[in-house]
Amino acid sequence: MSTPAPGSLLVLDDNRDIRRMLTMQLQLMGHTVVEAADGLEALDLIYTYPFDLVLLDLTMPRMSGFSVLEQIKADPALRHLPVIIISAAGELKNAVRSIELGAEDFLSKPFEAAILKARISASLDRKRLRDMERSYLRTIEQERATSERLLLNVLPKPIADRLRDERRLVVDRFPAVTVLFADIVDFSELSLKLRPAVLIEWLNDIFTTFDELAQKHGLEKIKTIGDAYMAAAGLPTPRPDHAAAAARMALEMLAMARLLANPLGEALQLRIGLDTGPVVAGVIGTMKFSYDLWGDTVNTASRMEEHGLPGRIQVTQNTYDCLRDQFRFEPRGPVAVKGKGAIDAYWLLEQQFDES
Image (cartoon, rainbow, N blue to C red; front, side):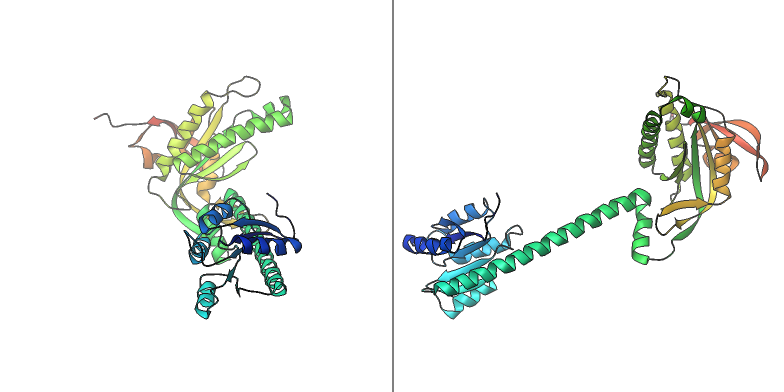
C-alpha cells in the first residue's frame, strides 16, 4: 500500500465527535485519515496499514492510550512510528510519562488547529528523515553483506577476518599440510573440439563438484589454473589429519570422474598428485586478492600430478608415511622430478577400514 502525500494518519479517540472533528481538520490539511474508537482496534489497524503518524487519546475503554503507546514502542517493527498524544488529561505528569514512553509530542485538549498542524508537520518531517536514514543504513548493510560474500568467495574466512581487522600483510608458515593438484587429461585436445560455451559450462560443473568435495572433506580450495584444480588440507586452520582428508577427497574425485563423461560422451580422466610438508601461505594483491601457497611442497605436489597417470593418484614418500597405516598403496618407484632428481612415489589405491 503506497502512502498518500503528505501523510497517512490514524486518529484514535473514543469520543466520536472529537474523532470526526480531528478527521475533518486533518483531511483539510491534505492528509489521509483512518479512525479507531479504542486501543485494540487501533493496534489491529497499525499492524495492517503503514501509517505515518498516530494521534492518540489517553483515556479509552478496553485499553488505555499509555498501553497502546507502550505496545507500539516495544515492537521493533513499529517503534519508529511517531505518536502524538492529544488528551484532555493534560496534567504535567501525563505529558512527562507520554514523552518517557516514546511519544513524539503531547497536546492538551482543547488545542489550536494551527498548533496541531505545526506539530504534525514537524513529526512527519522527522519521520521522513528517520526513514531515509534507515533506508541508507539498510543499503549500506546490504552492500557490506555483498562485499563480505564476495570476499569469502576469494579468501578463507579466517584470512578475510584478519585482512579486514588487521589491515596488514597476511602471511603464515604452516609446518605440515597436504597439497592436492588435479588435472583433466587431454583437456587441450578436447578444447579444440568443443564450442567455448559448452567447454566452459562443462568445466564449471566439474570444478563446482570439486568445490563441494573440498567443503565436505575440509580442504581449502586455493585456485584453478586452466583445467587444473589446487586445494590444500591443514590450512588456514591446522588439523592433524590433513593428509587423510586430502587422500579421501582425491579418492572421491576419481570415483566422481568414473561417473561422468565429457560433452563428446568420452570418459572423464583425472590425474591427481599429493605431497605433504611445510608451506608458506598468504594474501597477495591489493586490487584483486588471492590466497596462495608457496614452497617445495607445492611444487612437488604439482609434479606428482604432472608425472602421474590417467585415473590414478600419485603421492610422495612424505604423504605415504602419513597414511601407510590408513590407506592401501602400490609402490611406483623413483620418479624424476625437475629440481629434485628421482624421488620415490606411490599410487594411492583405497582407504583401509578396521574390520574388527
